[in-house]
Image (cartoon, rainbow, N blue to C red):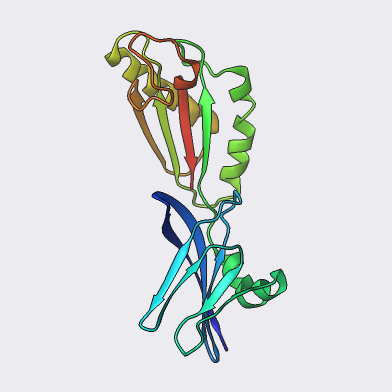
Length: 200
């Protein structure tokens, strides 16, 4: 009986790193790997190297045998993927979700649009028992760096309080460092006034 394994492979393609899903099936007469796209549809590349061959996988559902004497590539149908890897795919953990919540200038007050995002984050947390929650506050470069650090922390604490999560929370402030949009000092930039919420 074949035993499926599912693991991510980071592949380098034309000097850019991209995430690819590589499915490996071993056992009985089958011993092959298959490349799948990421959740957003992007597709990386995987180089399969054995003592006898080097094969590039760069197409959706493209696979190749490893070991043995076969050196060709092939494409699996959705039905074949489900048959061989359905259980492994179903058991794979959810990927982290990143939310960006924006704030009014100089205030720990969420914008109206970001207030509307809160139920979505709470729902995500509810669907992940034992979730790991990370909340990082940021500011733009208006004002003093020390005050902006404190403002980022206040914003992060506000979001933690609004989420009301019972899961452990990692909370921090980056203040005016790690800007989403690079600006000179004393610049009002709404996209930098944010809290990043990462749900794992």
